[in-house]
Length: 190
Length: 141
Image (tube, rainbow over all chains, first blue to last red; front, side, top):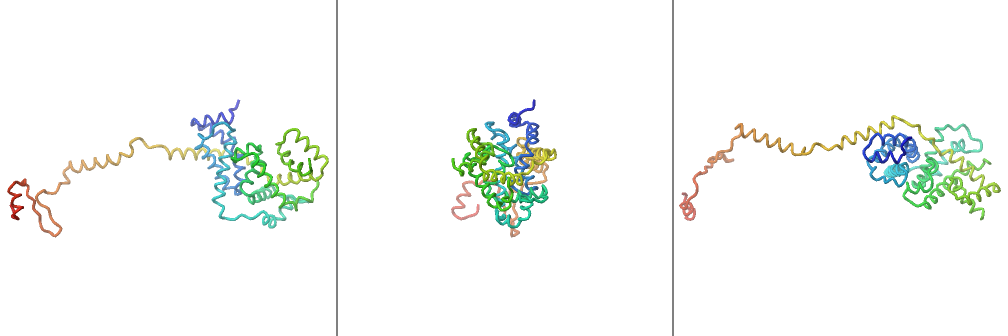
């Protein structure tokens, strides 16, 4: 039987590098996806994910085992991404409305009533740029829910806030995106 | 419940966060309300556009992380105890060898060359009572 994440984490806390290697193997696709969704740029996200694992290794003493190791790891990775975004904040991102205006045809292909053959690459790129227009906390809550599939209480632990705050952030993020993109998606009926 | 109250619960329903009675209530409302069905459908489409498939597992990534840890630990490895004394010992040993070999001699106690080229002679005789008296009356002993 395979050891659980928490068992591996306890071994890693004792200095067992092969246990930590197994944790990296199990969790890196999720951590990479989180970093890519938060940062947009793929190369920067790869570097950020690696640094997040190094920080996790250094900070293993802070994992108390009360929550799942994955949740703790998301917290480390999320904080690292937020740090990077704050340092980057001098370069102004496009607003949601500006992005929608500029990329209208691409959104039409993706969401419109007669969607064209939008490639997976185009969809991923547009999705990342769309997320980048949201305030960081709304973005993180939405990514953790939609991309990582975390429950509200897990998101609250990762973000260090209450479940009610998570609900409010998700609600605002969804309302922002839906309002900006309503024009493209309203033509389609169920 | 009003339509807006049901509408507020739609995402909680989709996220699987509602208790059973609320969940059943939303299901019943969705059967009757086309507007809420459309609302959910629109979000599903939007989320599908936003969602990125998880990147495939990469042994290369795992190897890079582990190499980073190894490098970091190598750099942080403490040097052998007392390493900081080594330069002091080396300096002391060097000085000892220089003095012992006689290549460095202390300047003569009697004669020092002054900067203006003149000599300054020191007496090696211990000062006695006569010297003190001579100093008081302003004579050279």
